[in-house]
Length: 610
Image 1: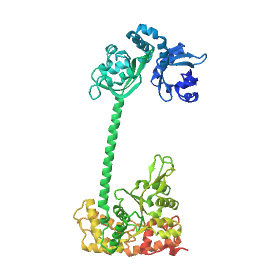
Image 2: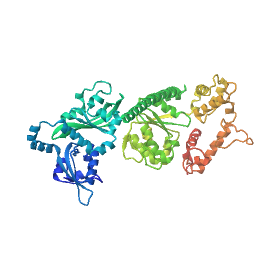
Image 3: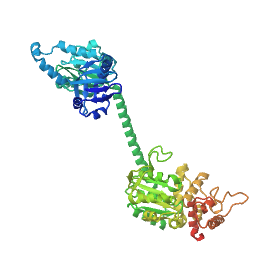
Image 4: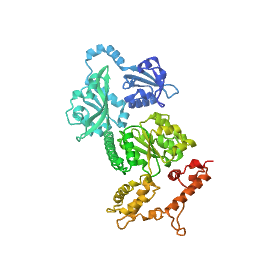
Protein backbone atom coordinates (compact mmCIF):
# COMPACT_ATOMS: atom_id res chain seq x y z
CA UNK A 1 0.00 0.00 0.00
CA UNK A 2 1.17 3.51 -0.88
CA UNK A 3 -0.05 7.04 -0.16
CA UNK A 4 0.66 9.33 -3.15
CA UNK A 5 0.01 13.02 -3.84
CA UNK A 6 -0.43 13.12 -7.66
CA UNK A 7 -0.46 16.94 -7.79
CA UNK A 8 2.99 17.40 -6.22
CA UNK A 9 4.27 14.06 -7.62
CA UNK A 10 5.25 12.87 -4.11
CA UNK A 11 5.25 9.43 -2.53
CA UNK A 12 4.15 10.20 1.04
CA UNK A 13 4.21 6.79 2.73
CA UNK A 14 4.61 3.09 1.99
CA UNK A 15 4.02 -0.09 3.96
CA UNK A 16 6.53 -2.93 4.26
CA UNK A 17 5.17 -4.89 1.30
CA UNK A 18 5.41 -1.83 -0.97
CA UNK A 19 8.96 -1.18 0.23
CA UNK A 20 9.87 -4.77 -0.64
CA UNK A 21 8.27 -4.40 -4.08
CA UNK A 22 10.06 -1.12 -4.86
CA UNK A 23 13.36 -2.13 -3.23
CA UNK A 24 13.92 0.50 -0.56
CA UNK A 25 12.97 1.98 2.81
CA UNK A 26 10.22 4.66 2.98
CA UNK A 27 12.68 7.55 3.32
CA UNK A 28 14.59 6.39 0.22
CA UNK A 29 11.38 6.03 -1.81
CA UNK A 30 9.93 9.40 -0.74
CA UNK A 31 13.18 11.15 -1.66
CA UNK A 32 12.33 10.67 -5.35
CA UNK A 33 9.32 12.00 -7.29
CA UNK A 34 6.71 9.29 -7.78
CA UNK A 35 7.08 9.62 -11.57
CA UNK A 36 10.58 8.12 -11.08
CA UNK A 37 8.87 4.74 -10.52
CA UNK A 38 6.54 4.98 -13.54
CA UNK A 39 8.82 5.03 -16.57
CA UNK A 40 6.85 4.36 -19.75
CA UNK A 41 3.62 4.04 -17.69
CA UNK A 42 3.52 7.79 -17.04
CA UNK A 43 0.78 8.48 -19.69
CA UNK A 44 -1.34 5.65 -18.24
CA UNK A 45 -0.82 7.02 -14.73
CA UNK A 46 -2.10 10.47 -15.77
CA UNK A 47 -5.31 8.94 -17.10
CA UNK A 48 -5.68 6.61 -14.11
CA UNK A 49 -5.28 9.35 -11.48
CA UNK A 50 -7.76 11.56 -13.32
CA UNK A 51 -10.29 8.73 -13.16
CA UNK A 52 -9.52 8.02 -9.48
CA UNK A 53 -9.84 11.68 -8.41
CA UNK A 54 -13.16 12.21 -10.20
CA UNK A 55 -14.76 8.75 -9.89
CA UNK A 56 -13.08 7.16 -6.87
CA UNK A 57 -12.45 4.28 -6.50
CA UNK A 58 -10.55 3.24 -9.69
CA UNK A 59 -8.82 0.06 -10.84
CA UNK A 60 -6.18 -0.74 -13.48
CA UNK A 61 -4.06 -3.73 -14.39
CA UNK A 62 -1.93 -1.90 -17.00
CA UNK A 63 0.57 -0.03 -14.81
CA UNK A 64 4.22 -1.09 -14.68
CA UNK A 65 6.24 0.24 -11.72
CA UNK A 66 10.05 0.41 -11.74
CA UNK A 67 11.91 -0.39 -8.52
CA UNK A 68 15.08 1.44 -7.43
CA UNK A 69 17.16 -0.88 -9.62
CA UNK A 70 14.92 0.03 -12.60
CA UNK A 71 13.42 -3.48 -12.79
CA UNK A 72 9.76 -3.52 -13.97
CA UNK A 73 6.88 -4.89 -11.89
CA UNK A 74 3.47 -5.42 -13.49
CA UNK A 75 0.82 -4.51 -10.90
CA UNK A 76 -2.91 -4.37 -10.49
CA UNK A 77 -3.72 -1.05 -8.84
CA UNK A 78 -6.75 -0.08 -6.78
CA UNK A 79 -6.93 3.68 -5.98
CA UNK A 80 -9.16 5.52 -3.50
CA UNK A 81 -9.18 9.21 -2.53
CA UNK A 82 -8.50 9.80 1.15
CA UNK A 83 -11.28 11.77 2.87
CA UNK A 84 -10.69 15.53 2.81
CA UNK A 85 -7.46 15.23 0.84
CA UNK A 86 -6.21 15.17 -2.72
CA UNK A 87 -4.04 12.20 -1.83
CA UNK A 88 -4.59 8.69 -3.15
CA UNK A 89 -4.35 5.44 -1.24
CA UNK A 90 -3.00 2.84 -3.67
CA UNK A 91 -3.31 -0.88 -3.13
CA UNK A 92 -0.84 -2.77 -5.35
CA UNK A 93 -0.99 -6.44 -6.25
CA UNK A 94 1.90 -8.06 -8.12
CA UNK A 95 0.09 -9.08 -11.28
CA UNK A 96 2.13 -12.20 -11.93
CA UNK A 97 1.28 -13.55 -8.49
CA UNK A 98 -2.36 -12.56 -8.87
CA UNK A 99 -2.52 -14.26 -12.25
CA UNK A 100 -1.02 -17.41 -10.76
CA UNK A 101 -3.65 -17.43 -8.02
CA UNK A 102 -6.43 -16.90 -10.54
CA UNK A 103 -4.99 -19.60 -12.78
CA UNK A 104 -5.09 -22.10 -9.92
CA UNK A 105 -8.63 -21.07 -8.98
CA UNK A 106 -9.83 -21.33 -12.57
CA UNK A 107 -7.87 -24.46 -13.44
CA UNK A 108 -10.98 -26.63 -13.56
CA UNK A 109 -12.86 -24.08 -15.69
CA UNK A 110 -9.93 -23.73 -18.08
CA UNK A 111 -9.82 -27.46 -18.60
CA UNK A 112 -13.50 -27.30 -19.56
CA UNK A 113 -13.24 -24.18 -21.70
CA UNK A 114 -9.79 -24.83 -23.25
CA UNK A 115 -7.29 -22.05 -23.96
CA UNK A 116 -8.03 -18.31 -24.03
CA UNK A 117 -9.69 -17.73 -27.36
CA UNK A 118 -9.46 -14.91 -29.84
CA UNK A 119 -12.64 -13.40 -28.42
CA UNK A 120 -11.05 -13.05 -24.95
CA UNK A 121 -7.84 -11.53 -26.41
CA UNK A 122 -9.89 -9.12 -28.45
CA UNK A 123 -11.70 -8.06 -25.28
CA UNK A 124 -8.35 -7.42 -23.56
CA UNK A 125 -7.20 -4.99 -26.27
CA UNK A 126 -10.64 -3.40 -26.47
CA UNK A 127 -10.43 -2.72 -22.75
CA UNK A 128 -6.92 -1.21 -23.13
CA UNK A 129 -8.09 1.02 -25.95
CA UNK A 130 -11.27 2.02 -24.11
CA UNK A 131 -9.53 2.82 -20.79
CA UNK A 132 -6.78 4.86 -22.43
CA UNK A 133 -8.73 6.54 -25.23
CA UNK A 134 -7.88 10.06 -24.01
CA UNK A 135 -4.15 9.36 -23.81
CA UNK A 136 -4.06 7.53 -27.14
CA UNK A 137 -5.67 10.49 -28.87
CA UNK A 138 -3.48 13.13 -27.23
CA UNK A 139 -0.11 11.36 -27.42
CA UNK A 140 2.41 12.66 -29.95
CA UNK A 141 4.06 9.25 -30.18
CA UNK A 142 2.66 6.45 -32.28
CA UNK A 143 0.99 3.66 -30.27
CA UNK A 144 -0.47 0.41 -31.56
CA UNK A 145 -1.37 -3.01 -30.16
CA UNK A 146 -0.52 -6.47 -31.44
CA UNK A 147 -1.93 -9.87 -30.58
CA UNK A 148 0.29 -12.91 -30.12
CA UNK A 149 0.04 -13.63 -33.87
CA UNK A 150 1.43 -10.20 -34.78
CA UNK A 151 -1.92 -8.82 -35.98
CA UNK A 152 -2.66 -5.17 -35.26
CA UNK A 153 -5.49 -4.71 -32.71
CA UNK A 154 -5.68 -0.90 -32.40
CA UNK A 155 -3.83 2.19 -33.69
CA UNK A 156 -3.76 5.73 -32.30
CA UNK A 157 -4.02 8.86 -34.54
CA UNK A 158 -0.29 9.70 -34.20
CA UNK A 159 0.66 6.27 -35.60
CA UNK A 160 -1.66 6.83 -38.56
CA UNK A 161 -0.10 10.24 -39.19
CA UNK A 162 3.52 9.05 -38.93
CA UNK A 163 3.08 5.89 -41.04
CA UNK A 164 0.52 7.09 -43.57
CA UNK A 165 -1.54 3.94 -43.01
CA UNK A 166 -5.14 4.31 -41.74
CA UNK A 167 -6.59 2.32 -38.89
CA UNK A 168 -8.61 0.30 -41.42
CA UNK A 169 -5.40 -0.49 -43.33
CA UNK A 170 -3.66 -1.78 -40.18
CA UNK A 171 -6.15 -3.39 -37.79
CA UNK A 172 -6.31 -7.13 -38.30
CA UNK A 173 -3.21 -7.21 -40.53
CA UNK A 174 0.34 -8.34 -39.81
CA UNK A 175 2.16 -5.17 -38.72
CA UNK A 176 5.63 -6.59 -39.44
CA UNK A 177 4.78 -7.39 -43.04
CA UNK A 178 3.03 -4.06 -43.45
CA UNK A 179 5.67 -1.56 -42.30
CA UNK A 180 8.58 -3.37 -40.53
CA UNK A 181 9.62 -5.85 -43.19
CA UNK A 182 12.94 -4.35 -44.32
CA UNK A 183 16.01 -2.87 -42.64
CA UNK A 184 17.30 0.65 -43.30
CA UNK A 185 19.83 -0.66 -45.88
CA UNK A 186 17.06 -2.40 -47.84
CA UNK A 187 17.88 -5.92 -46.66
CA UNK A 188 15.14 -8.31 -45.56
CA UNK A 189 14.20 -8.19 -41.85
CA UNK A 190 13.11 -11.69 -40.69
CA UNK A 191 10.28 -11.58 -38.19
CA UNK A 192 12.21 -14.01 -35.97
CA UNK A 193 14.80 -11.26 -35.35
CA UNK A 194 12.21 -8.57 -34.57
CA UNK A 195 12.38 -7.20 -31.01
CA UNK A 196 8.65 -6.45 -31.05
CA UNK A 197 7.78 -10.10 -31.67
CA UNK A 198 10.34 -11.16 -29.07
CA UNK A 199 8.05 -9.65 -26.42
CA UNK A 200 5.48 -12.34 -27.28
CA UNK A 201 7.88 -15.13 -26.35
CA UNK A 202 10.07 -13.85 -23.50
CA UNK A 203 7.56 -11.53 -21.81
CA UNK A 204 10.22 -8.77 -21.54
CA UNK A 205 10.08 -5.10 -22.43
CA UNK A 206 12.26 -4.40 -25.49
CA UNK A 207 13.62 -0.97 -26.32
CA UNK A 208 15.21 -0.20 -29.71
CA UNK A 209 16.58 3.21 -30.73
CA UNK A 210 17.76 2.74 -34.31
CA UNK A 211 15.43 0.95 -36.75
CA UNK A 212 13.05 2.06 -39.47
CA UNK A 213 9.32 1.74 -40.09
CA UNK A 214 8.17 2.06 -43.70
CA UNK A 215 5.71 4.78 -44.67
CA UNK A 216 2.83 3.94 -46.98
CA UNK A 217 4.58 5.93 -49.74
CA UNK A 218 7.72 3.75 -49.43
CA UNK A 219 9.80 6.22 -47.35
CA UNK A 220 11.95 4.80 -44.56
CA UNK A 221 11.18 6.55 -41.25
CA UNK A 222 13.88 6.30 -38.53
CA UNK A 223 12.19 5.37 -35.24
CA UNK A 224 12.89 4.40 -31.66
CA UNK A 225 10.32 2.21 -29.94
CA UNK A 226 9.39 0.30 -26.81
CA UNK A 227 7.51 -3.03 -27.03
CA UNK A 228 5.70 -3.96 -23.79
CA UNK A 229 4.16 -7.44 -23.41
CA UNK A 230 0.47 -7.79 -22.40
CA UNK A 231 -0.64 -10.59 -20.03
CA UNK A 232 -4.11 -12.01 -19.44
CA UNK A 233 -4.65 -14.69 -16.82
CA UNK A 234 -0.91 -15.21 -16.60
CA UNK A 235 -0.60 -15.80 -20.33
CA UNK A 236 1.11 -13.60 -22.96
CA UNK A 237 -1.58 -12.36 -25.32
CA UNK A 238 0.30 -9.66 -27.27
CA UNK A 239 2.15 -6.36 -26.91
CA UNK A 240 1.67 -2.60 -26.99
CA UNK A 241 4.26 -0.70 -29.05
CA UNK A 242 5.06 2.99 -28.46
CA UNK A 243 7.27 4.52 -31.17
CA UNK A 244 8.69 7.95 -31.98
CA UNK A 245 9.68 9.53 -35.32
CA UNK A 246 13.35 10.55 -34.92
CA UNK A 247 14.01 12.00 -38.36
CA UNK A 248 14.70 15.48 -36.93
CA UNK A 249 17.03 14.04 -34.31
CA UNK A 250 18.88 12.05 -36.98
CA UNK A 251 19.21 15.19 -39.10
CA UNK A 252 20.56 17.15 -36.12
CA UNK A 253 23.05 14.36 -35.34
CA UNK A 254 24.24 14.33 -38.95
CA UNK A 255 24.63 18.11 -38.92
CA UNK A 256 26.64 17.83 -35.72
CA UNK A 257 28.86 15.14 -37.26
CA UNK A 258 29.36 17.32 -40.35
CA UNK A 259 30.25 20.29 -38.14
CA UNK A 260 32.74 18.22 -36.13
CA UNK A 261 34.27 16.94 -39.36
CA UNK A 262 34.64 20.52 -40.60
CA UNK A 263 36.18 21.59 -37.29
CA UNK A 264 38.67 18.72 -37.48
CA UNK A 265 39.49 19.70 -41.05
CA UNK A 266 40.04 23.32 -40.03
CA UNK A 267 42.16 22.17 -37.09
CA UNK A 268 44.38 20.11 -39.38
CA UNK A 269 44.60 23.03 -41.78
CA UNK A 270 45.65 25.41 -39.00
CA UNK A 271 48.24 22.91 -37.78
CA UNK A 272 49.67 22.68 -41.28
CA UNK A 273 49.66 26.47 -41.63
CA UNK A 274 51.37 26.79 -38.28
CA UNK A 275 53.98 24.27 -39.35
CA UNK A 276 54.47 26.20 -42.58
CA UNK A 277 54.83 29.52 -40.76
CA UNK A 278 57.35 28.01 -38.35
CA UNK A 279 59.37 26.73 -41.31
CA UNK A 280 59.23 30.20 -42.82
CA UNK A 281 60.48 31.71 -39.58
CA UNK A 282 63.29 29.18 -39.46
CA UNK A 283 64.29 29.97 -43.02
CA UNK A 284 64.09 33.72 -42.42
CA UNK A 285 65.52 34.04 -38.93
CA UNK A 286 68.03 31.26 -38.37
CA UNK A 287 71.63 31.83 -37.36
CA UNK A 288 72.62 32.51 -40.96
CA UNK A 289 70.78 35.85 -40.53
CA UNK A 290 73.48 36.82 -38.03
CA UNK A 291 75.45 38.53 -40.74
CA UNK A 292 79.13 39.29 -40.27
CA UNK A 293 82.68 38.02 -40.56
CA UNK A 294 84.24 39.77 -37.60
CA UNK A 295 85.79 37.82 -34.71
CA UNK A 296 82.90 38.98 -32.48
CA UNK A 297 80.33 37.36 -34.81
CA UNK A 298 82.40 34.19 -35.14
CA UNK A 299 82.57 33.93 -31.34
CA UNK A 300 78.80 34.54 -31.11
CA UNK A 301 78.02 31.73 -33.59
CA UNK A 302 80.30 29.35 -31.67
CA UNK A 303 78.46 30.15 -28.43
CA UNK A 304 75.07 29.56 -30.10
CA UNK A 305 76.24 26.22 -31.46
CA UNK A 306 77.41 25.16 -27.99
CA UNK A 307 74.31 26.12 -26.00
CA UNK A 308 71.49 25.52 -28.50
CA UNK A 309 71.30 21.68 -28.19
CA UNK A 310 71.03 21.94 -24.38
CA UNK A 311 68.12 23.07 -22.19
CA UNK A 312 70.26 25.57 -20.31
CA UNK A 313 68.80 29.02 -19.64
CA UNK A 314 70.57 31.82 -21.50
CA UNK A 315 71.01 35.50 -20.61
CA UNK A 316 71.77 37.77 -23.58
CA UNK A 317 73.17 41.17 -22.64
CA UNK A 318 73.75 44.10 -24.92
CA UNK A 319 72.62 47.53 -26.02
CA UNK A 320 69.29 48.13 -27.72
CA UNK A 321 69.27 47.32 -31.41
CA UNK A 322 72.10 44.79 -31.39
CA UNK A 323 69.91 41.82 -32.39
CA UNK A 324 69.28 40.05 -29.07
CA UNK A 325 66.00 38.58 -30.30
CA UNK A 326 67.74 37.24 -33.40
CA UNK A 327 70.24 35.44 -31.15
CA UNK A 328 67.38 33.97 -29.12
CA UNK A 329 65.67 32.69 -32.26
CA UNK A 330 68.91 31.14 -33.49
CA UNK A 331 69.30 29.28 -30.17
CA UNK A 332 65.69 28.05 -30.36
CA UNK A 333 66.02 26.88 -33.98
CA UNK A 334 69.19 24.97 -33.13
CA UNK A 335 67.56 23.19 -30.17
CA UNK A 336 65.46 20.03 -29.95
CA UNK A 337 62.50 22.30 -29.16
CA UNK A 338 62.48 23.82 -32.63
CA UNK A 339 59.24 22.06 -33.58
CA UNK A 340 57.49 23.85 -30.68
CA UNK A 341 56.83 27.59 -30.50
CA UNK A 342 59.17 30.36 -29.43
CA UNK A 343 56.98 32.69 -27.33
CA UNK A 344 58.27 36.27 -26.95
CA UNK A 345 57.38 38.52 -24.03
CA UNK A 346 58.40 42.17 -24.04
CA UNK A 347 58.58 42.79 -20.30
CA UNK A 348 58.91 46.54 -20.82
CA UNK A 349 55.53 46.73 -22.59
CA UNK A 350 53.39 44.92 -19.97
CA UNK A 351 51.45 47.07 -17.45
CA UNK A 352 52.64 46.40 -13.91
CA UNK A 353 49.27 45.06 -12.71
CA UNK A 354 49.02 42.55 -15.56
CA UNK A 355 52.45 40.91 -15.28
CA UNK A 356 51.24 37.86 -13.34
CA UNK A 357 48.25 37.29 -15.62
CA UNK A 358 50.42 37.70 -18.73
CA UNK A 359 52.98 35.17 -17.49
CA UNK A 360 50.76 32.59 -15.77
CA UNK A 361 47.23 33.21 -17.13
CA UNK A 362 44.02 33.65 -15.14
CA UNK A 363 40.66 32.01 -14.56
CA UNK A 364 37.28 33.58 -15.16
CA UNK A 365 36.37 36.08 -12.45
CA UNK A 366 39.92 36.36 -11.06
CA UNK A 367 39.72 40.15 -11.43
CA UNK A 368 37.59 42.78 -13.11
CA UNK A 369 37.56 42.14 -16.84
CA UNK A 370 38.53 38.46 -16.57
CA UNK A 371 35.45 37.19 -18.45
CA UNK A 372 37.08 33.95 -19.66
CA UNK A 373 39.83 31.55 -18.68
CA UNK A 374 43.08 32.57 -20.38
CA UNK A 375 46.39 30.69 -20.58
CA UNK A 376 49.58 32.58 -19.86
CA UNK A 377 52.80 32.76 -21.83
CA UNK A 378 54.34 29.86 -19.89
CA UNK A 379 51.48 27.55 -20.93
CA UNK A 380 51.75 28.67 -24.55
CA UNK A 381 55.48 27.95 -24.49
CA UNK A 382 55.07 24.46 -22.97
CA UNK A 383 57.55 22.17 -24.69
CA UNK A 384 59.17 25.16 -26.40
CA UNK A 385 61.12 28.30 -25.53
CA UNK A 386 60.08 31.48 -23.71
CA UNK A 387 62.02 34.62 -24.67
CA UNK A 388 61.90 37.30 -21.96
CA UNK A 389 62.99 40.54 -23.59
CA UNK A 390 63.92 43.44 -21.30
CA UNK A 391 63.92 41.07 -18.31
CA UNK A 392 65.16 43.85 -16.06
CA UNK A 393 61.71 45.47 -16.21
CA UNK A 394 59.97 42.62 -14.33
CA UNK A 395 58.57 43.97 -11.02
CA UNK A 396 60.45 42.82 -7.94
CA UNK A 397 57.34 41.26 -6.35
CA UNK A 398 56.84 38.99 -9.38
CA UNK A 399 60.45 37.87 -9.62
CA UNK A 400 60.01 35.30 -6.82
CA UNK A 401 57.13 33.64 -8.71
CA UNK A 402 59.19 33.60 -11.89
CA UNK A 403 62.04 32.02 -9.95
CA UNK A 404 59.71 29.26 -8.71
CA UNK A 405 58.67 28.40 -12.27
CA UNK A 406 62.30 28.26 -13.38
CA UNK A 407 63.19 25.98 -10.46
CA UNK A 408 60.13 23.68 -10.28
CA UNK A 409 58.46 24.17 -13.69
CA UNK A 410 55.17 24.66 -11.79
CA UNK A 411 52.75 27.59 -11.41
CA UNK A 412 49.10 28.52 -10.73
CA UNK A 413 46.90 30.76 -12.81
CA UNK A 414 45.69 33.96 -11.16
CA UNK A 415 42.57 33.12 -9.14
CA UNK A 416 43.12 29.36 -9.41
CA UNK A 417 44.42 26.79 -6.90
CA UNK A 418 45.33 24.12 -9.45
CA UNK A 419 49.08 23.64 -9.85
CA UNK A 420 50.11 23.19 -13.48
CA UNK A 421 53.37 21.76 -14.77
CA UNK A 422 55.23 22.97 -17.84
CA UNK A 423 58.45 22.18 -19.68
CA UNK A 424 59.85 25.53 -20.77
CA UNK A 425 63.33 26.74 -21.62
CA UNK A 426 63.91 30.42 -20.84
CA UNK A 427 66.09 32.81 -22.81
CA UNK A 428 66.28 36.28 -21.29
CA UNK A 429 67.67 39.49 -22.74
CA UNK A 430 68.51 42.84 -21.20
CA UNK A 431 70.30 46.08 -22.01
CA UNK A 432 70.55 46.98 -18.33
CA UNK A 433 73.31 46.20 -15.85
CA UNK A 434 71.56 43.58 -13.75
CA UNK A 435 74.48 43.50 -11.31
CA UNK A 436 73.89 47.18 -10.51
CA UNK A 437 70.15 46.51 -10.15
CA UNK A 438 71.00 43.74 -7.63
CA UNK A 439 73.08 46.24 -5.65
CA UNK A 440 70.16 48.68 -5.75
CA UNK A 441 67.74 45.98 -4.55
CA UNK A 442 65.57 46.09 -7.67
CA UNK A 443 66.55 42.65 -9.03
CA UNK A 444 66.86 39.36 -7.17
CA UNK A 445 70.31 37.85 -7.14
CA UNK A 446 68.97 34.26 -7.09
CA UNK A 447 66.87 34.97 -10.19
CA UNK A 448 69.93 36.47 -11.90
CA UNK A 449 71.95 33.31 -11.30
CA UNK A 450 69.03 31.13 -12.46
CA UNK A 451 68.85 33.07 -15.75
CA UNK A 452 72.56 33.56 -16.25
CA UNK A 453 73.46 29.89 -16.72
CA UNK A 454 75.01 30.64 -20.10
CA UNK A 455 75.76 34.35 -20.68
CA UNK A 456 76.07 35.77 -24.19
CA UNK A 457 77.15 39.34 -25.00
CA UNK A 458 75.56 40.96 -28.03
CA UNK A 459 78.28 43.37 -29.08
CA UNK A 460 77.38 46.88 -30.35
CA UNK A 461 77.85 47.68 -34.02
CA UNK A 462 80.70 50.12 -33.32
CA UNK A 463 82.69 47.16 -31.93
CA UNK A 464 82.27 45.23 -35.21
CA UNK A 465 82.41 48.11 -37.67
CA UNK A 466 84.03 45.86 -40.28
CA UNK A 467 80.66 44.06 -40.66
CA UNK A 468 78.84 47.25 -41.70
CA UNK A 469 79.25 46.68 -45.50
CA UNK A 470 77.90 43.11 -45.23
CA UNK A 471 75.00 44.25 -43.07
CA UNK A 472 74.24 47.18 -45.37
CA UNK A 473 74.06 44.96 -48.47
CA UNK A 474 71.90 42.45 -46.52
CA UNK A 475 69.42 45.14 -45.43
CA UNK A 476 69.47 46.68 -48.91
CA UNK A 477 68.38 43.39 -50.49
CA UNK A 478 65.52 43.03 -48.01
CA UNK A 479 64.44 46.66 -48.44
CA UNK A 480 64.39 46.34 -52.24
CA UNK A 481 62.14 43.30 -51.96
CA UNK A 482 59.98 44.97 -49.33
CA UNK A 483 59.42 48.19 -51.31
CA UNK A 484 59.59 46.60 -54.76
CA UNK A 485 62.59 48.67 -55.86
CA UNK A 486 65.00 46.29 -57.62
CA UNK A 487 68.44 47.39 -58.81
CA UNK A 488 69.22 49.85 -55.99
CA UNK A 489 72.89 49.81 -54.96
CA UNK A 490 75.32 51.40 -52.52
CA UNK A 491 78.43 52.95 -54.09
CA UNK A 492 81.75 51.99 -52.42
CA UNK A 493 82.33 55.57 -51.25
CA UNK A 494 78.99 55.54 -49.41
CA UNK A 495 79.93 52.27 -47.69
CA UNK A 496 83.00 54.07 -46.31
CA UNK A 497 80.71 56.76 -44.89
CA UNK A 498 78.65 54.10 -43.17
CA UNK A 499 81.81 52.67 -41.60
CA UNK A 500 82.87 56.08 -40.30
CA UNK A 501 79.57 56.62 -38.43
CA UNK A 502 79.38 55.61 -34.73
CA UNK A 503 75.89 53.98 -34.93
CA UNK A 504 74.54 54.77 -31.43
CA UNK A 505 71.33 52.94 -32.43
CA UNK A 506 73.31 49.86 -33.50
CA UNK A 507 72.07 47.42 -36.15
CA UNK A 508 68.45 48.60 -35.85
CA UNK A 509 69.53 52.12 -36.75
CA UNK A 510 71.53 50.85 -39.75
CA UNK A 511 68.51 48.88 -41.01
CA UNK A 512 66.23 51.90 -40.63
CA UNK A 513 68.68 54.22 -42.39
CA UNK A 514 68.96 51.81 -45.34
CA UNK A 515 65.17 51.48 -45.64
CA UNK A 516 64.71 55.25 -45.49
CA UNK A 517 67.23 55.85 -48.24
CA UNK A 518 65.67 53.13 -50.44
CA UNK A 519 62.32 54.90 -50.10
CA UNK A 520 63.63 58.37 -51.01
CA UNK A 521 66.19 57.47 -53.67
CA UNK A 522 65.43 58.57 -57.24
CA UNK A 523 68.44 57.27 -59.16
CA UNK A 524 68.83 53.82 -57.59
CA UNK A 525 72.01 54.95 -55.81
CA UNK A 526 72.00 55.40 -52.04
CA UNK A 527 73.81 58.28 -50.39
CA UNK A 528 74.50 58.79 -46.69
CA UNK A 529 76.27 62.16 -46.65
CA UNK A 530 73.77 63.41 -44.02
CA UNK A 531 75.20 61.02 -41.44
CA UNK A 532 78.58 62.81 -41.25
CA UNK A 533 77.33 66.24 -42.25
CA UNK A 534 75.76 66.76 -38.84
CA UNK A 535 72.15 66.23 -39.95
CA UNK A 536 70.19 63.74 -37.93
CA UNK A 537 68.52 61.07 -40.02
CA UNK A 538 65.41 61.49 -37.88
CA UNK A 539 63.27 64.64 -37.55
CA UNK A 540 63.25 64.68 -33.70
CA UNK A 541 65.33 63.51 -30.74
CA UNK A 542 65.15 63.95 -26.99
CA UNK A 543 66.93 67.34 -27.17
CA UNK A 544 64.01 68.83 -29.08
CA UNK A 545 63.34 69.97 -32.62
CA UNK A 546 66.25 71.49 -34.53
CA UNK A 547 64.97 74.83 -35.79
CA UNK A 548 66.30 76.88 -38.67
CA UNK A 549 67.36 79.59 -36.21
CA UNK A 550 69.59 77.15 -34.34
CA UNK A 551 71.09 75.72 -37.51
CA UNK A 552 72.36 72.17 -37.89
CA UNK A 553 74.69 70.78 -35.23
CA UNK A 554 77.70 68.60 -36.05
CA UNK A 555 77.24 65.03 -34.93
CA UNK A 556 80.08 65.24 -32.43
CA UNK A 557 78.52 68.36 -30.84
CA UNK A 558 75.10 66.70 -30.70
CA UNK A 559 76.54 63.61 -28.99
CA UNK A 560 78.51 65.80 -26.55
CA UNK A 561 75.38 67.75 -25.61
CA UNK A 562 73.44 64.55 -25.08
CA UNK A 563 76.18 63.19 -22.84
CA UNK A 564 76.50 66.40 -20.82
CA UNK A 565 72.74 66.59 -20.46
CA UNK A 566 72.56 63.01 -19.19
CA UNK A 567 75.42 63.59 -16.71
CA UNK A 568 73.66 66.69 -15.38
CA UNK A 569 70.49 64.68 -14.87
CA UNK A 570 72.42 61.92 -13.04
CA UNK A 571 74.00 64.51 -10.72
CA UNK A 572 70.61 66.00 -9.96
CA UNK A 573 69.09 62.54 -9.31
CA UNK A 574 72.05 61.27 -7.26
CA UNK A 575 72.85 58.52 -9.78
CA UNK A 576 69.29 57.13 -9.91
CA UNK A 577 68.41 56.15 -13.50
CA UNK A 578 64.98 54.49 -13.53
CA UNK A 579 61.83 54.83 -11.45
CA UNK A 580 60.12 57.86 -10.00
CA UNK A 581 62.51 60.80 -9.69
CA UNK A 582 65.13 59.10 -11.83
CA UNK A 583 67.24 60.64 -14.60
CA UNK A 584 65.25 58.87 -17.33
CA UNK A 585 62.03 60.46 -16.07
CA UNK A 586 63.74 63.85 -15.88
CA UNK A 587 64.98 63.59 -19.47
CA UNK A 588 61.75 62.11 -20.82
CA UNK A 589 63.52 58.93 -21.96
CA UNK A 590 62.83 55.24 -21.49
CA UNK A 591 65.14 53.84 -18.79
CA UNK A 592 66.40 51.19 -21.19
CA UNK A 593 67.40 53.87 -23.72
CA UNK A 594 69.27 55.91 -21.13
CA UNK A 595 71.06 52.80 -19.74
CA UNK A 596 72.19 51.90 -23.25
CA UNK A 597 73.58 55.39 -23.96
CA UNK A 598 75.34 55.64 -20.62
CA UNK A 599 77.03 52.31 -21.30
CA UNK A 600 78.09 53.52 -24.75
CA UNK A 601 79.56 56.67 -23.27
CA UNK A 602 81.30 54.76 -20.48
CA UNK A 603 79.36 56.69 -17.83
CA UNK A 604 78.65 54.75 -14.59
CA UNK A 605 75.58 55.92 -12.61
CA UNK A 606 77.11 54.78 -9.29
CA UNK A 607 79.79 57.47 -9.66
CA UNK A 608 77.12 60.15 -9.03
CA UNK A 609 75.62 58.68 -5.87
CA UNK A 610 75.85 60.84 -2.80
